[in-house]
Length: 291
Length: 165
Image 1 (cartoon, rainbow over the protein chains, first blue to last red):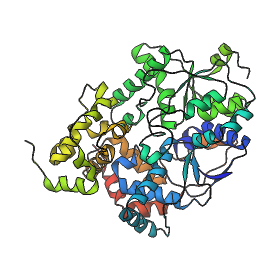
Image 2: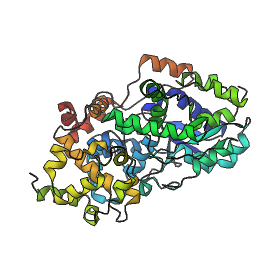
Image 3: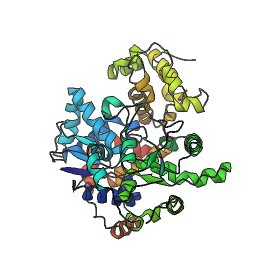
Image 4: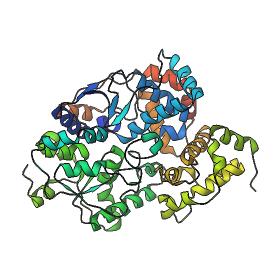
């Protein structure tokens, strides 16, 4: 099995350790991810799309025009996945959009018909759940994981066409396949607040504060995310909230690929877990996870 | 005073006919996480109402309610019993705000980066060396001239250079 790999911007250029874990996991599963030259920003469905939809379509379609793998294209980022799936959706829904987009692409000698399949890496993990289970070497016993799906992994369901927009199960099942426990919590399906960072920092912080509070009350000892925007929102704001509000958040935030890689037996050092702001060392000790 | 702009109303309807299905039940606002924490100051139902009425001045110039406070969580779209494509309509309104230079400055930074580098976050020396240490390959991103040609075609270059609020 093989896919073209669309990395996007945030993971490779800011959080490369997340990429390292994801590449290791897929290699171990025998799924080939092919690097492709020439991609631009996806562009951001919570950034460029909101200010200029036609630019978003044009750049997104250009990126998709570079993919030629029969398996389609895979991304580690929910934002990139939403953009690429969204561009397909709009192009295939309306012939005039397809024509307009290709009018732009023609200027750079490219054409896109709307046929490249797009997958989130968690989709592919879920489709290979049996193999994931078989590959676990070190079950994550004692890990009480709060699964944060994030919005763009699920919605709009008409574009994403994966899992249930309000009662999702895929990431919970992957987490449990690793031997961890998925802990239910209030506000589980709510937004992390990251996109509001651009327009109202206080509201953005309030949203993540509410989520962290609910997660802590539910007794989870870590959080798992599948989107780099959510990851940054959870990782980078705990200290700030503690300073501002006197809270005592100290929850390790894992990317789904990191949890899978740990269960597959990879060492924290080779995954770059030392780059996390909230270090997971105390968690490993508390649950007796030997690293 | 609010002035009805039929041209604006028709433009929104032309781009997204689902606007006309709205019967103002407020399911969208009831499920909106931002409406909840702003106690209704941000109100998706009201934005749709103003769009139906063609109140362009209120939506684009006064930005009341402020369309930039949508967190794009897409719950409203899923919940709407009339299948109104709210976030697509919000995007249309925000695109108009952008063309008039009325948008939060943070969007400008991202757009400028894409215009200059083709990607939203250029690779710093520190990140390049961290990638090497992690055993990751170097990345060959898009030729910048090609991206700039596209951004010129869509007039993004002009609108982004002018800047936001």
